Length: 98
Image 1 (cartoon, rainbow, N blue to C red):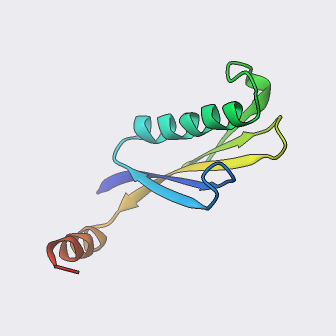
Image 2: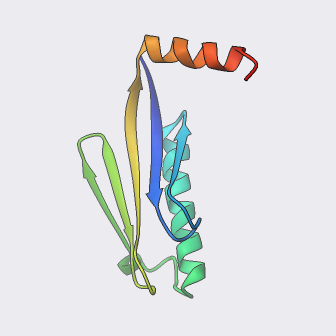
Image 3: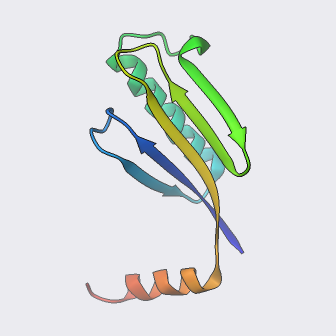
C-alpha cells in the first residue's frame, strides 16, 4: 500500500484553505515549516523563536499552530494510505483528456 502525506492549512497566509499532497513526509513537513517562515515574515516575528510554533503529534497527524502575530494559523500534516482502487481511479483520470 502506498502512503502519501497531506498538508492541510486553513490560513490567511494564502488567503484560502489549501490541501497539498506529498510523496514524502520530509517534503510535507518542509512545507509546513515553510508556511511558518511566511507567517513569521508577515508578522515581523523571529522564526527561530520556538514560542511562536506549537507542534503536537496524534495518531497519523502532526498539528502545527503558529501564534504571536495578529492571528493564529493551523496546519495539519496527515499520513494517508492510498488504496489500490484509489490509485487506479487517479491513473484513469490523468490518462483521459478532461
